[in-house]
Image 1 (cartoon, rainbow, N blue to C red):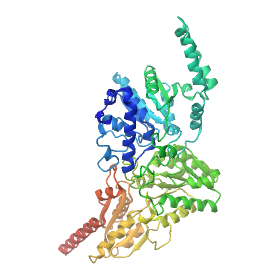
Image 2 (image 1 turned 30 degrees about the horizontal axis):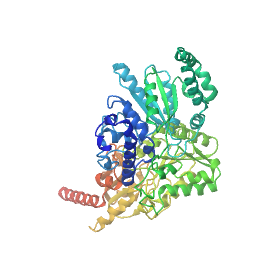
Image 3 (image 1 turned 180 degrees about the vertical axis):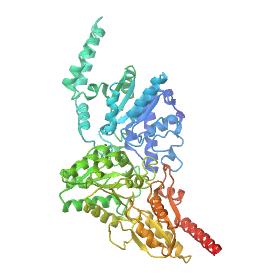
Image 4 (image 1 turned 60 degrees about the vertical axis):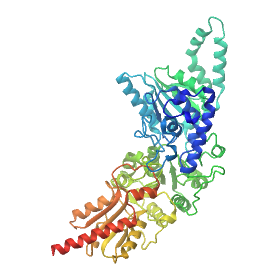
Length: 628
């Protein structure tokens, strides 16, 4: 049946009786592709029928479909002309793992972070109403994303809407891990309380069956629906906010979803269709372990085991072990995550210290200010969060933590390039946005040994500190330290002359590899590990000037706002006249691809860097001889 899907809206040509067959084929394609490329599997398996129903209801791209987070849009991509290229998913120059406006007219809004779809949809509704066009607009949001403050702000706005907007609440009881908090509890109450639905259906059937007056009588009875709902359904949160609520609906029944969409489309206002889906549906191993199969590396389909078993410890697991060790020594230490206990490595902390662990849901802004409150109350919080997710709490970092000099440690995972998740997840901006905040110390360990030391050091400072570390295994970046951590003193790993190569985090190993290649050409560079990123090391700049003329900066982040830029500015202000050679990422968003491919594309290659240094050094010597 997939052979009949060539472009958007082709699914409407498939006979209804053949749709289950198409669903099986789509699930097989999802499993086969993610087993080879990695990606978000369980969430996409859970929305197959929902996506089918939406595509049969809408006319794309004229109508607008916005996916929240967007990692569950694989089926949408398959149905909109990208089936034949689906094997390139998450690969360099291939399909993105998220909606992307430049990829298809059917991707009307790019999403990669949670809780954005309702706000975007409201903007599109306003644009539609001003232009007086009549397209349908549908936002799909998960129950996990509904815990985000932005989603609740948008719902507050949607309650006053006078024209149609359909909001699909895709409820599978989890984002990555199980959802937490009041919204999750409220939805659980709706899911488990079927009395109201049975009562409503029985009343409808009984009353409409009365000859001549049945339909009119039922319409009058609907006036009392609020009273009836409040008897059986806890809270009626959505209707109290001014939205029409429909559901719960079986998310794997295309017929039921289709009926709900048709009914919702007739409402002059915002309508929430509460759809219940099963994460991982159609692949038993994903059904049984939805968290494991949320975001996967390549795996064996028959066994469900990942192909690249990581034998060495990752930075995340080292953080996990270290934070537990620190908590055993200080009962004031508390840990916070924003719906990522597994991804950030805090799950083991949760098991060992449940009363000192806090999962606030997908609510990064709240997580940071909550941590500030804990610190103001005399505790010492550690907030574990991904680099790109922390962007959402920039204001809270400034006003609630750093302005008040509160002792909060930010453990920033996935700093730098993360690979196949692409633009929305590459942690390439954090050096810039963190380093501009007064009073925030920003640390970057070169390896896991230094990560352990930096976490303990950061905790001991009793002020705001961020420790940023990459995704990946420990053996990839292990480098022997030569001096202990000291306040704003960076580490000279190798002493030489004429050329100094600076690296930070993962690029320290790269700097050492470049140095080895230069030694074969009788050049003896100095290699420096930049530990402190928020202040340029002016003392080292002055010290090196005595016998160094060239500085090479290697930094896995955008140039603007980088340590490289700050260091060059400090040298210029001191009129030190170094020749600088820089290898950074461009001031742009970086696409998906393996980290190795992206390093090669953007110049993080030891052989090419060494050749460039040799060429520029020879050129510099020629210039000096000419001047003489």
